[in-house]
Image (tube, rainbow, N blue to C red; front, side, top):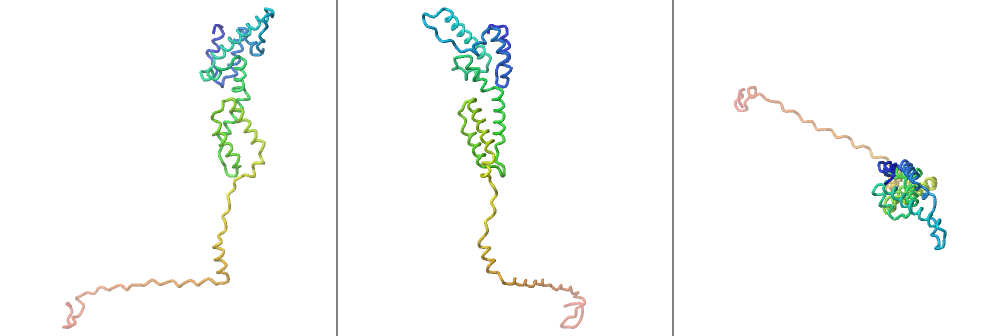
Length: 229
């Protein structure tokens, strides 16, 4: 970059979140170099062979300014963004695409979409259809570009914000337990019968305690004397 102001861009490269500040710095450099007109004016048509010289001069000036502007833009990008914009032929195409990706409205849409995906959890009483479609949407959109993904996500969120009451019919509710026919049948059989009397409680058998006998006080069966058995 030959401009003394180009150091602003080299020190503040575009990363995405700093798009607005980066764009202001870029316009300062392009206005100083007199290249900013290529962002608002289309390329002049190729003049005929017998066209006046001013037409050829205007076309050459536009091409040179467009090339310089593209160099300033690409040199002040991250490597990922440089690779993504290799196929663009004009500085205006690059700026339009960056505006879609990182403009104020797109940033807000991206924030809302990310919040919605982070909070995409099935809760009791919430529509099952909405939850499943959001989960499926998140899993099947991996091959889209960032610009396409942001547009689709925002459109998807707007659909469900406007459908509100229509999805309420698909709310999951806890099912009540089904009646047991066997229990009903048993109740019918026992109808009119008195409940059987409770069986008398069984008494616990008490064991008699054995008394210890002192052999000195017991009389002998043979001789009738105490002191021995």
